[in-house]
Image 1 (cartoon, rainbow, N blue to C red):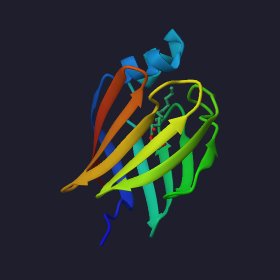
Image 2: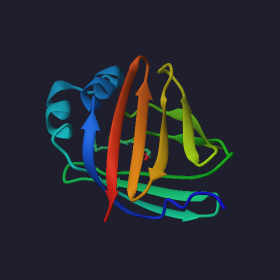
Image 3: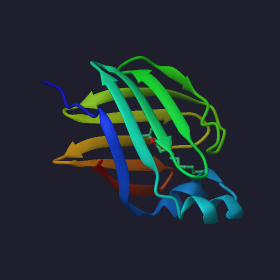
Length: 134
Ligand code: VLZ
């Protein structure tokens, strides 16, 4: 049975979100605010169909996809660059490749116990976050 990501997850730790935002060209003022945030993820999973809501006091981000089906991603409220994105299973990990202007852009989500892990990548920067199940 594949992993089930459904639930509400609260950020506990974040490493190098600043580097990730710099690689995306996020401006100084936005980075200052964004790095203080403790986002929450609300994930709805129905088989291979996902809705991932990342919410915070500053900005929210929504992505909806089906594993294996390429989709247009607008990254609205983040860097605003459009990507062609596709998410695949790597065993129980969800791996997203975001093809666009930025090299090596994507993320991986996986679960260990009651924690959700997220690795976000852009160019040579990697940000690692851990979320705890609410
Ligand atoms: O998450 O790629 O779970 O989209 C937004 C933080 C988080 C708040 C960015 C605003 C999305 C920051 C991270 C303003 C610059 C991500 C995916 C995997 C789903």
